[in-house]
Length: 227
Image 1 (cartoon, rainbow, N blue to C red):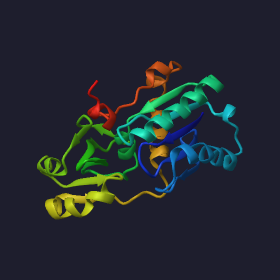
Image 2 (image 1 turned 60 degrees about the vertical axis):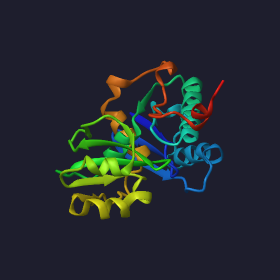
Image 3 (image 1 turned 45 degrees about the horizontal axis):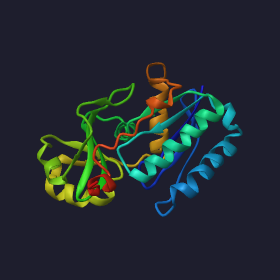
Image 4 (image 1 turned 90 degrees about the horizontal axis):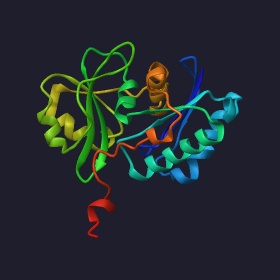
């Protein structure tokens, strides 16, 4: 089975094609790239490198948030177009869970972390399991100080949020803070596709109404709306 995974929830978006639980090819955007300009060409690149056409993909996988409001909308719109044109099924995967799926095996608690802007982070806790991360908490949007108050044992932190908050967490938590080493062999899109492979029968859908973005908090437009 071939699964095309797409992540557009973080600035460094990615695309990966898996076949029978093996990565055939994956690639990432640079942080300066615009999703609207580069995401589809990135899909084309991954497909051309593997020698498959879009119609030869068996299913699609998309990270559904939390993350960048604009990026999520672009990614979900792209997958909806693929599903409509190919009549192939899809799976929506939580972004933080996909981040946790990229962490190398560990006995420690895993904290997936994204920069939510406005001095907050998107976060959730997981435990490593051979068949995928086991969720310990719900997705949250909280201040990094409040997150630190929740840490009482050595914890592996992973995700794009470390680009902003690594120094703060390291100073605040000391030996309780463990930075996950980035796995160059697995992008967030690949992590999502691995989860989709494992959960395929449970979450498989053809109904685009099932593809709902998980924002966690309201967008700037919603917060400013007074009508």
